[in-house]
Image (tube, rainbow, N blue to C red):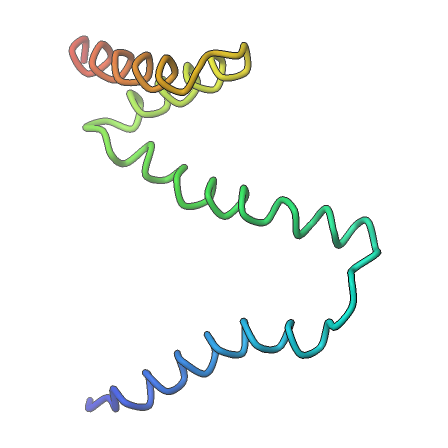
Length: 101
């Protein structure tokens, strides 16, 4: 089966441009709907979480050690630990769980 790479590139670029251009041309004034504003506020955080979460579980030798580190990191961050402390604790948790297993 022969694929036309240029057609794929054209479609990909058209979709990418449409995603960026259509909102700029259709929405000309400030968005006042609180639901839409709150939705757009959280989109970057959700996108980052969706990209990061699978990597947390798959970056270690076993998904169990990644899960333990994730839970430990969330608990430490919830209690106000700094980013350095959370990262260091997660690394130690992964090392400890993989050493035990």
